[in-house]
Length: 386
Image 1 (cartoon, helix red, strand yellow):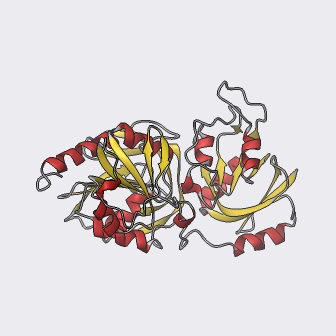
Image 2 (image 1 turned 45 degrees about the vertical axis):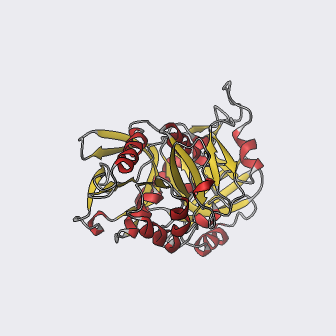
Image 3 (image 1 turned 180 degrees about the horizontal axis):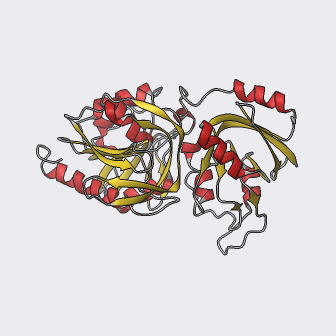
């Protein structure tokens, strides 16, 4: 079915819809991963974005129920060069097209993804509209210019959990307790290291990684107050990934600020940005973002180069951080942007990339175990643990 992609700057890309008729809009971005399209589709950090895969052939291994990263598809549209409608993989239970259609998400192919990627790399991420219904380029460009920009939007409210739940044995267990009124009795009797994970758009593999590291994980909505967290007395706090601009999330920034010094904190991606803002730093929008499974990052402590999985369009301004309290731990070697920092006196550290690697390499997976050891050290001696 014939379709068009129109960008706000007037660039038009002819294409084909392989999911039937429709129209959608969002910020056009690209991902350089060669595999992992199912994880990309279900990553809540892509809320509001139309994702272009730079690898040309997509759909060849189908879809399976084991590799999802959340309970839904979150991309606004999926853009590929060539769609393969006949998957060959023993784990596959459906085609990519059927999966997209089941969530009402448009998929398009027969589009010059190399030209689109080069255009976005040169001009930055752009608002766009895809339609198989309205094929008037002028009309579509006008629509693209009218949709909200990514900067200034609170997209976390659309992806965070409505109710708290425990992550046990690789699955969620919803609880009916009012998290704002609960106390330490909320934890199960066989608890290990107790951890509250703020869900700003959390991925399943982050929860799996925290559980493997020895934590009893309680996931709470993004709007949960600092007072509620303190009342249930966890041993650790985790700040998750999530979509969009961190600056509008004043409720989260204020909560994090109130929790600094209470318990050890670990943040990933949006969690890194929110912690940076809570500590007086600033964030900015990257030109076209970091999205893919091949981003080189240097661990400044070890000097080791780690190939990392990334998905973000905003970053912390490293020059805005207070060097008296914080030290830079990781740097992106492609553009020298901040990839992680640590508090010099408190057991608090963050990274911008995704150590849970889903999809992506496993070079940074040690961070979950490192956090668990920091929590144990804090429990043993809160005054000296760092």
